[in-house]
Image (tube, rainbow, N blue to C red; front, side):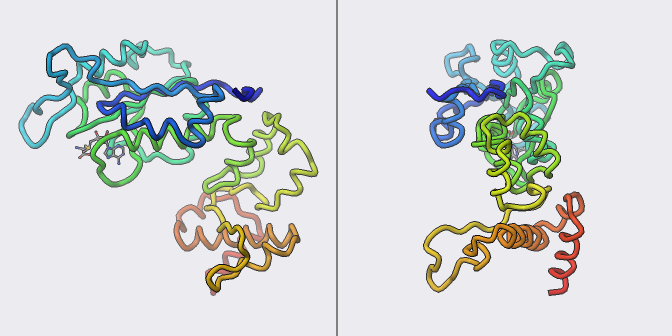
Length: 293
Ligand code: SAM
């Protein structure tokens, strides 16, 4: 087993679902599986039907007031949470670094900012709804947060729970190669925040001045912008050539090209992000030029 990152905290993520097998693939691949194997996160999936007491292991019932569909009953959910040692929100220590989250289309939008907040906690509990959703008293009693992964309705909270867990796990210190990795991605942090992260990054990537100056990515981390395009070999593919700047070996030219691409992509696909982005004077001039072209 690999060594645990010195600045890492171990996070625990509990997922409550009627389809625990849904998460088998998610838990056994890529970054999440490696983070678990390295002891940086403990991910547990709990079968809601384990907390029923009838022969049919019933988890749902008809809605009061009539209407379509079924609703997840409160008793199994409450028992599941009790078994995990989760207190009702009103009895939880306000300083506790845990969050009980209901995945819901009606929830607050899940963003990279929320993912960063959650990555700083010791424990998150994710409740997956099904059918028309869960009995609202569980939300009232236990949940301090409702998260939606987007403005569409899915059949259950399992995909959203996997989305939230994946986005959070890769932000836990030590999970990615070094602290800068996440800062340079889409929606990444600006340079000052990255410097704070670097103080905790003892794997050397950012402390080593040579290595840092050799990272020709952008001047501000992503600063809230979208990522730039990536290319690998071959240099020519079906008549399309890798941009000359990337082949030049000139780090300043590469940095400028990548920053311009970040600005162009953000302007094209998500202009709303530009308002909150960290922009230099050079960035602003580039944007004026891009808007005119
Ligand atoms: N009656 C609900 C409504 O109109 O919003 C839809 C329920 S949906 C069919 C079943 C479950 O899927 C929800 O309880 C929730 O856990 C999950 N779900 C569906 N869409 C979601 C989204 N966009 N984000 C997070 N969870 C979602």
